[in-house]
Image 1 (cartoon, helix red, strand yellow):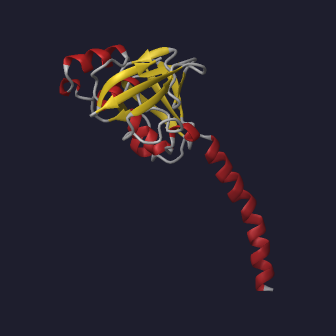
Image 2 (cartoon, rainbow, N blue to C red):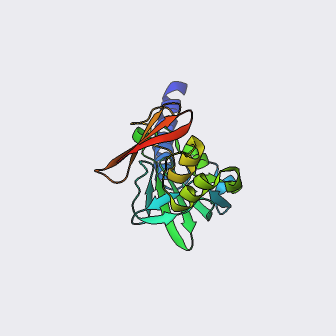
Image 3 (cartoon, rainbow, N blue to C red):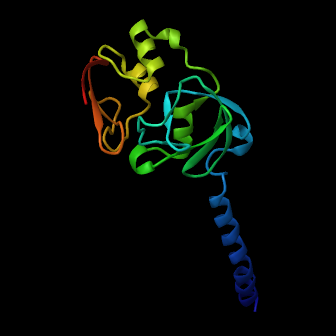
Length: 188
């Protein structure tokens, strides 16, 4: 009898548990603690491009330019997206884990920080390229990360590699070649 009552009560509770989980997955409240980030101000840690209100972790170089050190307000997140406000515009950062190789929490810390990036630690060449969101010969790997963001992990599985591939758009890529952590060649 006790087993039967447990099964019946489990059968009554389980659907509500499943419905509750499904609704939380659909809203912005995933792997990053909302009470820590929601409504808080952060600074972008790399340049981004938002096309039609979306930034994609494939890291296309098309759309509205959002410069490094831009002040943003986090509006929420779920397992695959971070919603933020930039200059009164709602932007969604879409993590395509297949390409980024990172979960949403890792993506958050790649793109946002409590402090601005100190651009004075870069030389003049690096700093100018970062301000323009481009890559040039002689740039350091760190400067390229700030200027272009992380390359898709599907094409560049490790930042220790001496060749990084970025997508300009869906059809065109750019290869950045390094030697001793400096850009030595760029192939469009």
